[in-house]
Image (tube, rainbow, N blue to C red):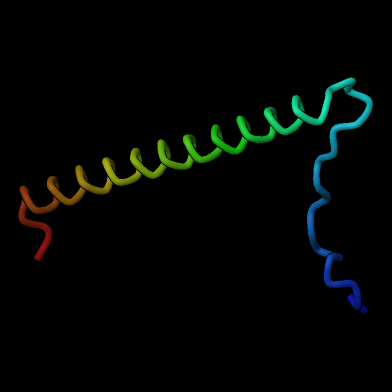
Length: 65
């Protein structure tokens, strides 16, 4: 039924007919990758902050341990 291992993969975005040089395309992809890592770090930091606040509040009111 699903003999192709790439059957369930999402297609890669390919920049076509943009008039960009290979250097411009590489710079764009590098910046996008850096932005994605920065967003991941920001979301992780916010999650840890919320988790820390929840731990402090639960411990403060005696509902934990």
